[in-house]
Each structure stands twice: as C-alpha cells, then as structure tokens.
Amino acid sequence: MNKTWWKEAVIYQIYPRSFMDSNGDGIGDLNGITSKLDYLKYLGIDVIWLSPVYKSPNDDNGYDISDYQAIMDDFGTMEDFDKLLAEAHKRNIRIVMDLVVNHTSDEHKWFMESRKSKDNEYRDYYIWREGQNEQTPPNNWGSCFSGSAWKYDEETKMYYLHLFSTKQPDLNWDNPKVREEIFAMMKWWCDKGIDGFRMDVISMISKTKEMPDGKVNGLYGDYAPYSVNGPNVHKYLQEMNKKVLSKYDIMTVGETPGVTTELAKQYAGEGSHELNMVFQFELVDYGGKYGKWTDEKMPLTVMKQIISRWQTELYGTAWNSLFWDNHDQPRAVSRFGDDRPEYRNASAKMLATCLHMLQGTPYIYQGEELGMTNYPFQSPDEFRDIESINGYKEWCLDGKVSHDVFWPCITWKSRDNARTPMQWDNTEYAGFTAGKPWIAVNPNYREINAKAETADTNSVFHYYKKLIALRKEHPIMVYGKYKLLFEDSEELFVYTRTLENEKLLVVCSFSDKEIPFTIPDGFVRKPCLISNMKNAYDHQDIVLRPYEAFVLHRYQQ
Ligand code: TEU
Ligand code: CA
Image (cartoon, rainbow, N blue to C red; front, side, top):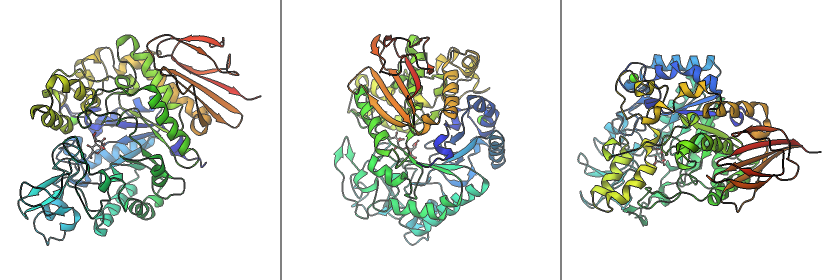
C-alpha cells in the first residue's frame, strides 16, 4: 500500500458561516478563521476543509456559487483568503477547498446567459428540456430540497433541471466547454497554492440522455438511476485527473452519494486515476420515514457490518474517509453517542476512539472536538436551512403528516443541528460574534465551549488532541489491517488492527449500562495507548462502564 501524506493526515472541516465572526455582523468569515488557526494548530490537525467561500447569493449557504473566482461578500475579500492560506501554510496546515460543480447558482453569469434564448452560446451549459406545459415538467423527479427537480423558465418556455434548489441549476457535463471552464478554474486555485478539493456531489455530474420517470419514493420520482454514478462520471473524472489533479501535489475527496464499495474502488482506487478517497453515506443515510426525515436509530450490529465491509473491501485497493458528521448531518454525539450530561463526555470520546482507530483519513467537523450537541429546536421558525424549511412545508404544512409525528424526525436530522455557531467561550453568543448571530447559539455554550475544554485536561478536546498525536507516533493506526471481533454484540464495537508484528485492540462500548468483557488473549496488561476512563486493564475479565473505550497495544512474540 502506498504511503501518502493525505492518508496520514487528520482533516478538520470548517463551515465558515458558523465558525468565527471577526467584524460583528453575526456571520463567520475568513479573518475569523485566520484568528483561530493557533487553536487548530494546538489541536494538531493537518488539513482544513473549507466549506464554500465563493461568491454566492446564499440560497444554500454557499453551495450555490455565482462566481468561482471571487469570495463571498459576507466572508471577506480575496486578500483575506490569501492571508488565510499563507497563515495556515506557515503553521503547516493545508487547505482543501470545496468544489461545487454539479450545479452553479442561477445568478452565475453562465446561467443568466443560458436562460436568455435557445441559441445562446451558454444554452448548452445547463440541462434544458421541454415539458408538456407549464404545470407538467419533463418527468416526475423530485429535488433533494422538496418539490419537482424541474423549474419552468418563462423566457424560453422550457424547464431546467435542478437536483437541489431551484437556484442551483445542474451543469451539463456532457458539454466539453463546461468541462474546460471548470478545469481552468480548478487550475487557477491550484496555482494559488491550495492543497486539494472536496468535490460536492461529484457522483451526480453525469446524467443519462434519456430521462424517464423514476420510481416514486415518498412524494416524487427517484432520479438516482439516471443521475447518480451516471454513464460518463468515471470518464470525466479521469479527464479531470489527467488535465488538472495529476499536475499538483494535492488531495481530493469526492462526496459521492450512492457509492458502493465496488464503485469506491473506481472513484478512489489505487491506480484508478480519479480521486484519492470518497465519502460514503451508508452510516448517515440510514432509515427514512418521510423522505430523509426520520427518528430511527441505527442498531450497532448494522453499523458494524457497514464499517467492516468498507474496511475489508477497500483494504489495499482504495482508501476510506472516516466521519461521523459534517455540515449536513446531526451532531455525532447526539446521534451515535449519548448527549445526556452524564454521558456526553464519555460517549464523545468513545466515538472518537472508534473512528480514529479505523483505517482511513479521519474528518473532524467543527465543534465535534468539543462534544457539541444537537440544538434543542422549539419551533420551525428557528430553521435557517433551505432543506429543513422546505421539508417542513412539504410534509407538515401541506398536511401529509402531523406536526407531532414529524417534529421528532425533522429535529433529529436537520442540518441546522450542525450549523449553530462554534462555541468558543461562555460569554454572550458563545464568543462567536460581537453582534447578533445569523442562527441561534446552542444554549449549552455556557458549559460546552472551547475555553473550558482547552482548560480541562479531561475534556473531549484534549482526548481528540491525544488521538491526533497518537496517529503521528503509530503508523499502525493508519496502515494496520482491520478485523472485527464479537460481531453479534449490540453493545460493543471491538476490533483489532495488525501491522507486521504489531497489534492494536480497540474496545468501544456503545451502551449506557455496565457490560462484562473478556479481554482477548495476549492483550491483558499490555500498554494502553488511550482510554476514556481510569482503568488498568490488568485482569482478563473486566466490567466496562457506560461508553468506556480503550486501545491496547502489543508486539507479537
Ligand atoms: O450535499 C449533498 C447530499 O447529498 C446531502 O448530504 C444533502 O445535503 C441532503 O442532506 C440530502 O438529504 C452536498 C452539500 O454537502 C450540501 O451542503 C449541499 O446542500 C448539497 O450538496 C448541494 O450542493
Ligand atoms: Ca463577519
């Protein structure tokens, strides 16, 4: 297996709008991020993934880009960006940009041209189709953010495709001019010195020519068979790799809804000349009662099967990316751990242990290192996210399901859980802004904040710091081979990693009860690399406390 810097790195995701506000307008910005680089350096991360900072009307908080080579007004200027990049590099921190090229904003100049007339030179940059009439779109596909995936455009009396919001028209990747423009833009950023790309819904860029109705699932037809992992996606990524990626020492991670382990080997296989790794969604897309909205919890055995399949099938052939949460997901500790006050600290550390000891590149989403929790929503007016706002309207206000039934589902999955401001200290608005924040601060900032966490050596923060440092000392954490033990347990996630004559035993309790446990032969009294409890692990039969996690290390005789 090739050794590379991005396999050994730990990546920290920043959602700039909610990270740090430097000028009191209530919106996080680039100078805010620069002011917190020392905090990130102290944590020990190697790479920042910046969610989009480009010019945008913010229909989807920057995932709707109107100019790929300019900075969003709310976030600052290109000079601020250059300063952030230089200051990060000074600290040996790399910066990976979000590349959102499945769609643009409808305010991008390409789309403003495209919609003008059928013979405009930009017409074919987007996906236009005739519908039967103004009320009947070309097919029954639903958009990710509710409603039809087609919008009728008065100007030319045709429909354009938008798999996300109506303000995010899908680009037509079959047009070679579109690809050339995107590749040129990517080179421009690489020449500036950025260190890679996280590619937004990159598995959705290639659509079939025929666009028949999809199977109705929920309220609309499913577009996936015709636009996810589509006919030319690998061809286009290989072209991108050849013309851009291969010319720079950068890393790439594809956000690939619908990816399987087999496809991951194509997208991110050693030697497939596409991407370095992909994000898979099997852990986070579990369940769904009303579209994606659900309050179902994944059984531990199911989680272990999914993780084990990815660990085993990609071993030696492709590379995993590891994450519990991001800006689109609820908070990790609330979803997979236990955010009740007595268990929050232990279960956040347990989840961190479980993830960072797996093979792959770990991603930390801002605030995860503090054990930040879901937001206690009281009313739908608190939503800021287009997906939650439209979802509430489509399912609840339009009368398909009652508020009481729907509320636990939408509050459990809402992306706004992850988007409340970073909790820096216990002053007003958690030290995020001197003004009024664009989205409410989680009221638990008085207890959960970076100032308190960095001051307390027993904190979630210091545990993450230690895990990151361990990764630098123990290549087995990066390169060791994975094996699952006790696969039928609904309480314990136990696995080993093996590298030459070294072995790690990773034990994580996902239970709020005490669980008896027999330490496998050969590991009793072996050095403990990290544990979230005070325990000697010097007897074979022990009782694990709620959410206990530890890692033992041995050399084979
Ligand atoms: O997300 C794409 C995606 O498939 C989902 O995670 C989506 O956000 C939604 O939760 C589906 O239920 C990416 C970005 O990460 C997201 O923030 C953007 O809104 C989206 O693409 C469109 O650019
Ligand atoms: Ca600001």
